[in-house]
Image (cartoon, rainbow, N blue to C red; front, side):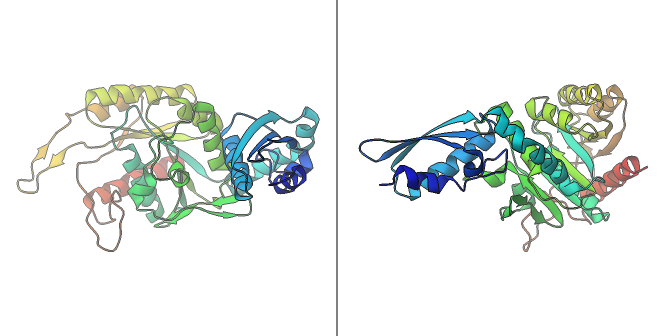
Length: 352
């Protein structure tokens, strides 16, 4: 069984997720208690900030280290380090984080894709808008910020996981588009049970700890509605612009107006409205059937004092045997061509 000294040696190299210094440097290993049966170890750890997503990750790391070394059960308690320790390292951390945001690139344009409710095709619009921007010669990334309902990796047929280089996460690249998603950090499609503040920390990590390189556009697939994540994005990215997605159905457009009004109240420019599932066109007769009604996109654009960027019909991408990407429309697909037009309008508006 391990001794106190051996446990200290095991934990000393572990890094504080906020101060980016080892527990040895910060004096983070505060207390170790080994129970009499020598199968249970209780440890108190001091870190720069408690009750966060990073703390949960650190907890898993420490428990893993100790169990690999023969401990049966581990009890962990966390406390904040003394103010003088935090102040000693915090300025360097803030400079490091500021420089790491988008790898220091200042020309990146942020576009959030939002909707009032789920099921309107917001994520489909995100991936295809990203693909169209890439086809127009832009360097593009996607943050799947719909942390409870992440779907971007599956839609794009992403099978790899991000790599880690030093202290940076390297996003997965698919079809020339860089992608980061909560889905990469969840095993077996498990449900996410974190609360709002912890999700906000994960979103912040997607900006500060991912090595995006030099991007022209970073698209954010927001959760539907106006919850914690949407509010965090509005606070973190004051220059972010938005595309609002709706279906023609009056209820979808009515609910989407809330997301749009939130953007306006936080001074986020709305680039326009995309009306998804606008109609179904019969291959046999060529007639258009307005399955979800008509007029929702135009009405929403009117309320938000913006324009309809495009109206997308109901149609599947072409099937391709050699490429699995169930939601990406090919460049020569009728809907692929519509996304191309939408992307061109956005570039003209953003870069005018």
